[in-house]
Image (cartoon, rainbow, N blue to C red; front, side):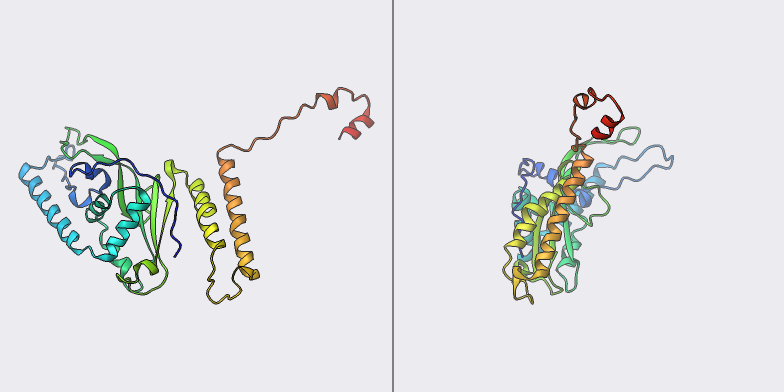
Length: 274
């Protein structure tokens, strides 16, 4: 499939073990803090409990790391290249994600049709933060790469996606042929602009350079193919107009009408001017 050439450099993330957390989802590493019986405060976990949870999370991550094969490595490579992270950072994010199992569901026969990753600012609790008396914690915005179904989190950054082209089992030998990859940049929530750019700069040029149209032997000379491409072009134009309207970029030109009305003397002049 055609691979997206549109890339966006991610935030500069250090590769130290503690800094890697900025690109990693905290789900398997985040302790669920039980509420106290009063309901007004949250209980601070004991150091022993924290150590045990951290130990369990480490075991889970290493088990997942051991499961990584050539298929996952292909996804990791595409993500690192498309988003602008190192392969180590992407791997760490994936094995730390509570939706890790979606990758296997994507590879399965007749499996998920899409696999989505968001890379954007997310409020995260500081790893060494302790709970305050009101149950709140110190948190900060950090860029995070995480697997998503696309329907539960607000989309404010970059979406990297993998799409299947058939219902075949995805294997190490066919992953590069059966899976398409693309990056959809909607920084600051500019979804219309991101979609307009993706279609106009990536998809349409790719479609217009497509040589093989399957059963349609005429290819680009076929009238139905030409109608389809015309419709896509028209849709992109509509997107552009909608975006500019929303951004208040459509401005009517001011016209100086004084020269037209200053010499109006009688009804016939008004009719002529009209």
